[in-house]
Length: 132
Length: 153
Image 1 (spheres, one colour):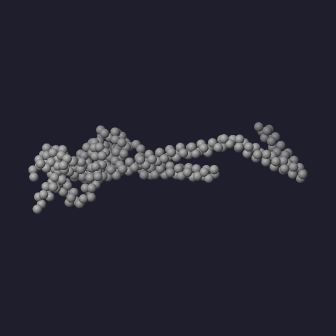
Image 2 (cartoon, each protein chain N blue to C red; image 1 turned 180 degrees about the horizontal axis):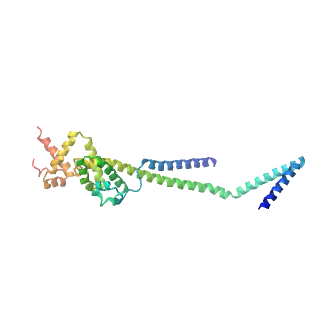
Image 3 (cartoon, rainbow over the protein chains, first blue to last red; image 1 turned 180 degrees about the vertical axis):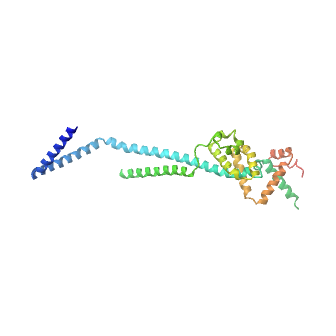
C-alpha cells in the first residue's frame, strides 16, 4: 500500500514535469482532443438519458401517485382529527352545562317529565280561567 | 413539466405544513385526544367523586370520560348541597340516552335565560308537582293533552 502510494506520487511528478515541458502546438492539439472527448461524452450521456426514457417518464407518474396517496392519507387524518377534536370540544362544553344541571335545585328529571309539562299547562289554564 | 413539478413541490410543502399544524395544534391544547384513564387509573379523589359511575366507567367512550373528569375537576369548587345533588344524580344522568340528555340540556339552557323569579316559580311548581299523589302524576304522564276531566277544578 505504501509502495503504491509512492509509485502514484512519482508518476504524478513525472506527468507534471512532462506537461510543463509540452510545447505550444502539442498543447493546442491536446486541448482540441480534450474538447472533442468532452463533446462525445455529453452525446453519450444524452443518448443514455433518452434510452432510459421509460424510466424518466414513469418517475413523475409514481411521484404524483405518491402525492395523491399522501394527500388522501392526510385528508383522512385531518377529518379524523377534526371529528375527535370536535367531539372533545363538545365534551368540554357538556361538562360545563352538565355540572350546572346536575347541581341545580330543580332536578333534570323535571325537564324530561312530560307529565310535569302537561301539569304546568293544566295549572296555567286553570289560573287563566279563574281570572275575572 | 417544470411548472407542474414546482406545483407538486408547493403542494407537498403545503401538506407538510398542514400536518405540522395538526400535530402542533393538538399537542399545544394539552387535552389528551386519544385514550382516557380506566377506573383503576383514576386518582383516589376522582374515584371518590365519580363513585356512582364506577361500574360503568370502563365502558364509557373517551369523550364521556373526559366530560366526567372535567366535572370531577369542578366538584371541589361546588357548595356542599350542590356536591350532594351531583353525586345523587350522576348515575341516573349517565343512564339516559344521548337524545334525552341533549333535550334536558336544551330546556335547562332556556330556563337559565329566565329571570330568577321565574326560576324560583319553576322550582316551587316542581315541588308542588312532586307532592301530587302517584296516580295523579301518572294520569298526566299517560295523557297526551292533559287529563282535565279527572282533575278537580
